[in-house]
Structures are given as C-alpha cells and as structure tokens.
Image 1 (spheres, rainbow, N blue to C red):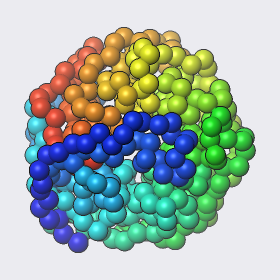
Image 2: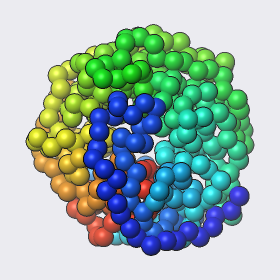
Image 3: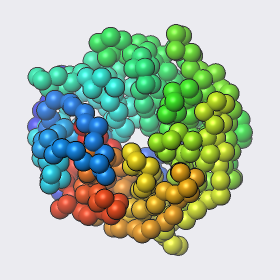
Image 4: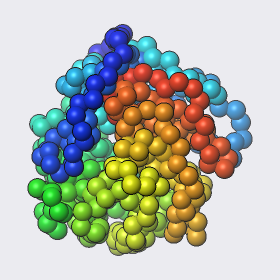
Length: 405
C-alpha cells in the first residue's frame, strides 16, 4: 500500500451540543463530536527516536522529523486514512504531503519500540487493529486483526515488543495480540472483559479507554470510564494471557479516561473525563495496586471540559492536561517526588476540542490534535514548562491523534 495525496477545502459545522458520554452506547464518537471538515492530511520520511529531554538539551535536534495523524474515515469531514507529515523541530512547522489509505478509522496510533512498525486501532463496532511497516520507501499496511470487541480506542506495545495491547471502548474489554518478527500481528491470544465493579451513574456498561504497561514492566493497567475503575493485570509473556490481580475504584461518576505515570513509577495521574477532575494515584509496583487520591481542579472553572489526556515531562517536573470543552491546556508543577500536582495556569490551545497530546522526542515541542477544528496545534515547551504556540495550527481532517517521531 502506498501513500497518496489527499486534499480538500476547509469547512466546519457545529454538529449539535455535546451530551454526556454515557448517553451514546458504544458510539463514543457521538460524544466526542465529529464535525470539522478540513484540508489535507500529510507526508513522511523514515522513523527515528531521540532521548533528549526538554530541560537537558545536549545537542541541537535534527530539523525534519516524521509525524503521523489519526482520524475517522467514516465520519463527515474525516480523512481517508492515516495522515502523513513532517515537522521542523526547531520551528514546529508541519508540512503535509499525503495519506496512507487502507486503514479504516485509525483514531489512535502507537509505535513499536524498534521504530519499524506503526499500529493503529480501527475504531468500529467490529473492532480491529492494523500494523503498518515503516521503511525508506514509505509506509505499507501489513494487515489487520480483529480485537474481539467493539470500538477499540487505544493501543500500546508491551516493552518486550512481542505483544500489542488494545482497549475496546464499546464492549469494555482489552485484547492481546502477538507481534511477529515482521511487525505484523497474529490472532488475539486473550480478551478480558471488565465485569466488576458495576457501571457508574448513567453508564450502561464498562468502557475500556486505555491500556498501558507500568514503567517497571510488571503489570498492565486498563482504565475503564464506564466502571469508574483502573484494572491491574499480569501478562504471561509466553502465552499472551492476562490475569487480573486488582482494581482501583474512582468516585462514582468520575469517568476515568487516561492515565500517565510519573518517571519514578511510584505515582500516576488520571484525567477524569466525566466529572472534570484529575487525580494523583500512588502505585505499588510489587502488587500492581493503584491507590487514587482526592480529585483536583483542571483549572477550567465552571466550563464543562471533558479532560482528555495528561502528559508528564521526562524529568517528572511538569504535567500538561488537554481540556476539550474549555479548549485549553493546563500546566501543573509536579512536587513532592511525584506525589502532588500544583496547578499553575491554563493556555488556549488554538483549536477546538483538543483530543490528544504528544511530545516530540526531545520534548521541545508539544502537539495537540484538535478534533472539531480539524487542526494540530504545536507549542514550544520552555524550561519552566511554559507553552508558546509556534504559529497557525496545521489543518488535518478530524485530527484525533498526533504521533511525532
């Protein structure tokens, strides 16, 4: 499969007012909105990684790097596949030149540790995950495998590189797929459905929203918005089987969406989509148990914000939160060795409904994918964590994920 050029005219529609996420069954896309038709997705070169941090910059960054963009292909104003682009790490300017077709509804993307394979969810009722080979000749779709669930919305690769983990929002389940030597995926080896505790207020069932591996590699954590819970599993790395060892409950109606660990591996931060809060959690690597603290403000006041995601700097000094209703990014100082978040400020995101955040490898830049405005905003990250918009946001159809390499 080759990358083709994709273009169109800018446009935007309101699509009605936002409702509570639990009111839409498996169709979480109805909640998060799918409106803005915009031009262009874009083009790429070959993958590479850097290990520089935002605050310890030992050498100048390589100027031109790759960027992949996730979208919805079955919604009005959406794209036709994975958006391809390059960006200049010194200026933050994005250049779009194509689209990789053949990947339906690629709303979330992640990279294999080798840097040679990209993975995408196919967020449909009959959910699937796709593998995409990256090479000097361009990206190529290797194939897809069913997840056994509905509406997969998140995926990650186990640090061993041997297993792909995915979260099915619609069916409240998590799946495991083996990763072959080529980067292609095998048939699912396990599917775990969240059945307890019962759903939170107004929720009709579980909604798995994220699945990640703990920093020490000992446990798999799955965040479930519908059950107000975070599940901890052990992964049998020979068989690809999950064994649940514990779960942590949030206050009823919190709607946890996204979890991010502190570099120490002893604390994690949860963005709660439904009640517009963040929570600092203690984490025990031995047992895999997560202990949530008290809910904290997102800094958005009375605005219904639907916080989406937290990012933490590699030094563990700052955290950034995407606020969709407020259309802002909140900056927190991380204190007490990771045990405390102190709200510093919020800045306008420069777009509508920031769905996903990502750092460039050097953490000099922060990317925000703005779903409703169909755009990607790029910020320079200062040594004090302050964010400065680099210029006019880049137009991308229903931008719901930005993955800079």
